[in-house]
Image (cartoon, rainbow, N blue to C red; front, side, top):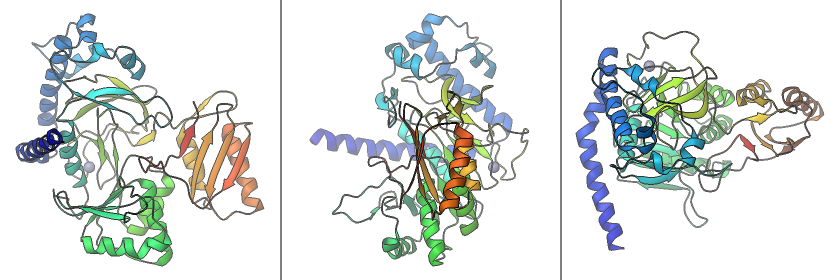
Length: 428
Ligand SMILES: [Zn+2]
């Protein structure tokens, strides 16, 4: 117990030290010119790759012939692309003999959890990057310790209130599990009392909250920045949220492996945090990520299996003025958000998201696909005979001749542990 308290105090001091040391550097980085950004990135990459070939058995054995004397970005291409399977099978060989790390893992809600190591400082880098990212709104720039409404990450027990305040961080949490008409006044009062100008949460949570506000015609004009993350931001969510709040939704992309993070700015572009990781997009639009912070278990050219929406043309200068690179036009789907057609073809989830967006009567949906490919489609909607027919026709049109059950429900369940709402669940 005493050890635990000591550890907590130590972490607290480390956090203060880190924030003090790096906040300004992180803030300034986004406004540097392209050459300066690349220069810093290449220096960081060199350190990461050097550690890999010196201290990480998997890379040591490969004898990659990296030119550290005349080091440039393309040296990265000498490294092979790796994925979860390769890392899982060679776990020990991917760990640095010199740097310690802590074990972390993916949630594994639909498959086996994936274990890996991250550094002790990983949380601090994550925080620094997030704080910077939350400042990417147009009419309000978030600063550390500003109040922030958090519509995620809090799942109260039955005897606990649906809200809590973390004074140290000035995070005002509202439960994503309890957004309903009965609690609406309480949620609105809580937000007004917080004086927060920023609201962040799961896309589904902000969407459901917005639908309620719209229905009751309640305006919360204090909110100037909306940040979503950790779930797919569906086109139908974005449309409803933006038209109601009259501000753009700024979406964040990252993974538990903490390899790369990307934040949308108010101009709609997805900026890579170039001091955090390097992104490549392959021919199949897979996001290939290289972490610039992980020395304990380097993730180098790691295929995340998440699919990017490629850029239609190169964006030279973002209207927001930042020079952070813009690697893609959005996220098409997470690695586990894929459905299988009757003939075995994999269907990109965006196909279904677009379809549901076009069917205006569908408020929310969840698709569960069994191993035998049969589909249960849960929907929140006012239905009649004609809508049933149209919906079945459209889904079968996309997925082929699979068994389809449509269940009309009042709400879609959230994962009890994470509070996230999964759109696609495929039994593996
Ligand atoms: Zn921008």
